[in-house]
Length: 269
Length: 367
Image 1: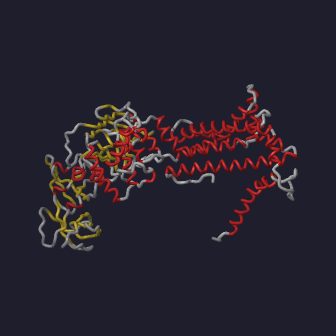
Image 2: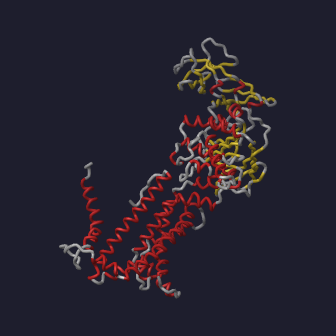
Image 3: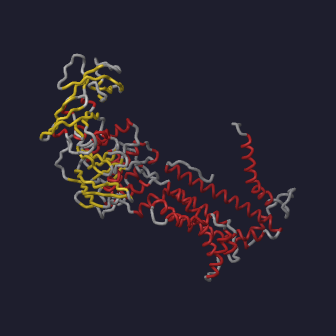
């Protein structure tokens, strides 16, 4: 298989460009020097210790987790309603309504954040992590709807009718048949929206009212050159956690597909 | 046919209409289906047969008229409360459950104990020939096995009516023929009314006590298979069921119910009342003649009734049978006839001059 050596080279360069910078993270996180530059000065774990000892990090992490978990839960639940309704039912104005739900995908985030800020201040709502959650739900719901729509679309309509035919109500049919079969989609949606929320910066910065939030915290720390290595240490941990989370999600997704005998139509890994 | 016509009515359609937007899907369906009957809804795709089945199940509402099951109007009865169960075209086996969980799904609200339910599931599986398959994953089954699971799942609830939506269309030919016989046996065994939707006329003829032939949202003819085949009530039904030769004819005279016609190539024929279906306005008059009612005579053999000379135009060999297309009576009218390939009867060549025996009573007039 050596018909297109150009393509192979292209693929290797592409991957290097994509992951090279991320590989730099752990390199300098363990480097015994406060400036990020070659040559490497020796091995140390002190940046991890320094990062670990910063109480602001823990506050930011806690807030971010609250925001991301709430956002993922809310937008996935909203996504289930919207996707189910758009796939299964006909109602007047559906294209318009679905269009508006999906619109935040393409709206500039900066504009959304600014207008939200103006409106919230205008009606006198105090900024807090709750306002950040609101903003994030707005942004993440379109992703949830997109993922869940394809999950609901792959359901054979006869399955529902069969459950009804065998005496179940609409509610118990949803619980016993539909929900288990779209569960991989729900997990995907939860994971994606969680990931989007946890590293989102603009809305968090505008609507967070100076609360420590992970992305805002990291951005702030970069102003101090001495803090950069400990932020690289934090980044290293975040990358590690992301890979583990993704692997777990993919494991469950593949198991779900194998259990129902479906065809694997691609996932994250 | 062991079916007795004096059984009580199980399903009654009273002027059933159904619209999808502007599309008039069911256009005044009337008719009854009797208890314990194996009934088929037969027609080309888009004729409304599946829609009609779904109005019985309760998956489709109707816009006018009434559907009665066992004497009760079903207008306000939702699908999950109707005494019907359905075998879906896709089988709709729940992929995240085992075979036993699928079959026992309808028993969830049954007050019986767990062991009694398990016994009922095992019994249902045995009935469809899947004894011991309960623990298997449903998605690992073959097409034929899924079909059986779907049957067991529907029959375990002992419905008054079992609805089958093209259940055999996804199977290969051998399996389909095998399942046809099994379904007939199963229906006799359980005695439940079976209603089958199919576009396959052969399947309908083989399996049914009675058949409703549907075109464009209406029942064209509702009759037993033999009547449908021998005395179709219109050209469309005749054309849809089996093969029918249509021969142009002229109507010479009508006396009482009897009609004398001059059929091109066949000559003058007197037709009895039962050979003239009442349907009219189907274009130029023709007489219909089934391929197997024509017989090719051996040289020197005398016909029992009438004979016509012909020349073979095409020979189609099927192994047990040979089909011949023959120009008759020196005209451009071509008829198809089927001959069994018995020992001593050679397959003839194209161009051979032959004598065809035929019987006036086999003709049906369409006008």
